Image (cartoon, rainbow, N blue to C red; front, side, top):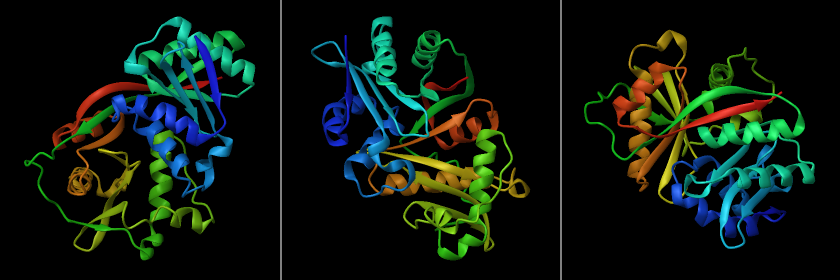
Length: 288
């Protein structure tokens, strides 16, 4: 096995894009990141590939394992066709150690995530913790049984009155911590893209939101699904995600993809009612 680190995102894109596309929906995150870097249109925050770690493990003929990390985020991995062995993982770990690249954690398909974490932490004499157990879902058609509630509309500038609070609350729900709204208005305004962020209103009152993310060839993701606590258990999140999923399909994508936290059975149940079906389970592991 041979470890190859890339410095040029365009070369990395050329080599690994067709490999990741073998499981387009499963690889929504690394694919979306690589496309962002390749296009170079948006270098906000972590999106500038100059700081990325990009690598592949090959057997001399084909790529067996792909790795990309966009600091400060975790390392994301894909074993080609979800097949790999201990030698492949060890080759990647050795390459990381020789390159001196700090890795805060890993997020990928569950079995690969744990195998990588065990090998990596043993080589550095550190520990690891499973931070989140996730499930990746895909949808090809919204269930006709989902009732239409409220009205979906694109986000707009006046939504800055509440969007920062909703975004931070969403992040707090994901991390399990407290949240605090920052003073950097432009950081929040970045999310108010009328083509991607959508608000569900009921009687003129904003009650839920969802955002499209990482548009690939046939797949588009759904994220930032949030409903304030005082509007929950009224069907708003279901209606919002269903409506945004319809928008994605109407735009010509054949699949919608989203991640769920397996610790939240309510959201998993909601998405399956809408028409989402599981692809695979994923782990987010942090190194300690």
